[in-house]
Image (tube, rainbow, N blue to C red):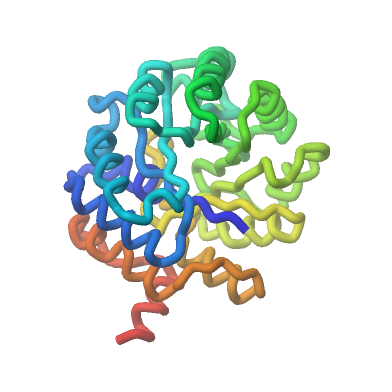
Length: 299
């Protein structure tokens, strides 16, 4: 079982309240101390587009001063070749690239069509492989069920993008229900379309806008998938999808997996306290169900 923690990037990118770099570093420290191993730290997006993530260089350097950082799998989102050049300068060997199954969404998000985004990826992947012997490249595919601008997305459209990414040589694809609209029947329909793709190359990235994230995890887990993205405290949303709620809370995912007999190696009590400082800065109260239960039981 692999859990990819995305709260420092996907969880914070849409927050208007500035979070100090040292506070982000403490969040990441708290997350890894709870037992999480894979953390998406931030993004090399242009600062004017996502000011919250403008301190990626300072944050990256800060967390790598931690004595145990070599045992962890830190990654960052790379939106284009310019961002990739910045990532290379910092020695970021694990990167994520972003596209979607909807042209309307990619145009709103990165000002490119799907094909244009994929054309840019090929050279990034080649350069990255040349620079890092331990490179790892993930490809995000958003709007796997529905696009806020173009409506429903067919499983075949999602499969087409996945195939192109895998042909380019990405190590895995992360399939995102960007608006948190999907139900298990849609997850199973997409799974049927994924025949022939090794399950270890597919991660699931569910949002919990309508409370269906865990149900979708259950459907994917039953089908044999074992890689899931989540955000501690349920932090996050999507700035390009009006009304999109937070990500699947890592606490809820951990509780569900452990209760289902799937070991995760994560201490739920430590994890439940990991986001408290950030939530206080944002002026928010905890809302993740398993987090609330864990906090209440420790009082």
